[in-house]
Length: 169
Image (cartoon, rainbow, N blue to C red; front, side):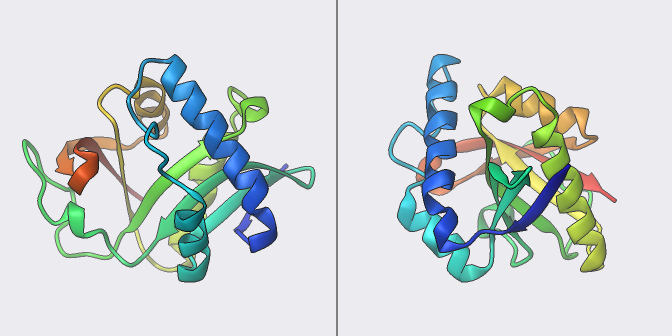
């Protein structure tokens, strides 16, 4: 049984461990994402302060981390080689999503997306947007398996080009 809840400062060590595992996984998979010290503890603390930080628990243990924001994403204002399904509507943004090595392949990541959908419905928001690195095939498979549709390309400042996806609830 999984439970998505707000991240607390007490969760930071587990969250950072999951992010480090995710970074190592991406590196071993040849993906140049999360290889430059991002996301770091300061980013996670900012997520907590802004109310964006969430963790996924299983049997009382933190097995996943994600940032969920209903405050929009300025980098999503311009999309190239495609378009969003929605225009000018509220949407949930998913960033910094990772599961622990122990939880990889168990359905935890899909459960995190499912519980984010439930959060959207509670907020009466019916669109979810997410982006990922073009070489992050594992994340692309995950989000497409969970019915997100490819929308185009977004540029995330210094992070560069990302493939953008949207799901309508």
